[in-house]
Length: 155
Picture 1 (cartoon, rainbow, N blue to C red):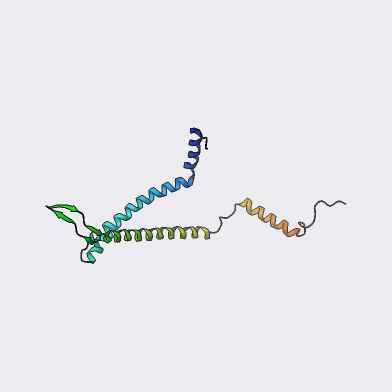
Picture 2: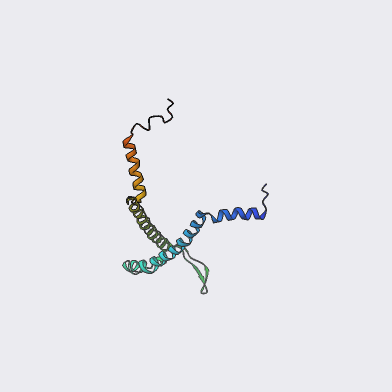
């Protein structure tokens, strides 16, 4: 049985919640929701109207297959129609494809940027580092067997 005090429990939760991964995930979810809204508007307001016009003005969201007609008595709907709303499915499918393509492009740009950064030569060393490297190389060249000889010779 766990025997936590409120303070211990809160401290443990604080350690968990403040970890970088959790915060990064939260930021990703918020940005993802905003990106989803932008993509939905792109599909609904920009892509679908011309696409609907190309197929004789059909609105995708109204496309459906009626399995059972609605029951109407005295002008009131007693039982709703049973329909398969494949137009909504097409709309969601197009949204998904656009989001997937946009994310693909974004990841591609990020990967190209990383490759470019990795291919850049290392920045030149400062004068002190260059001088020390030259001295090291000269010392290695003067006494190639110095590393093999023990320094603790007893005569």
